[in-house]
Image (cartoon, rainbow, N blue to C red):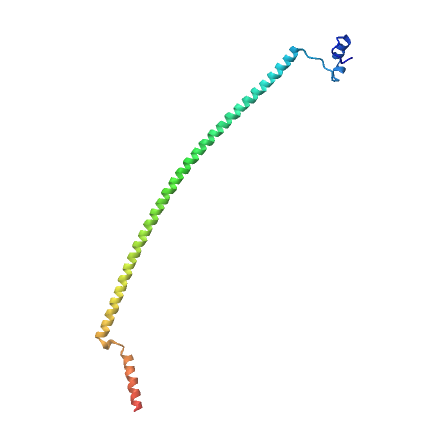
Length: 163
């Protein structure tokens, strides 16, 4: 009968107050005000925990918003840098193309000048060769006489020996 709460006997009330008995699984029934008080305390603790978590989440959100803002700013800055680099690259490319075109034109001009000089040298050479040939035709005595004499001598000498 120690655990029987239905009976209002003095021994059972004493049994409920005895720690040896209450620790063995027998608990006394709480009154409604005690239950309400415990409920309010639990809810108050839960609300405080939720408030702390909410505050922590707000701080985290604020921190993440700051990071997101910084990332957007960095992204915008990177985009601007990329655009500027593309503009510089394009202008340098156009500048290089202009330089290449100018060098090609300069090279073509140099080649024309070289061809003119070469043609002038060829013409001068041909003119000098023509003058030499013209001189040889006008003055046959200036031809190499020893070679001519040797040719006549050999044929005369050979003819005299045959006779």
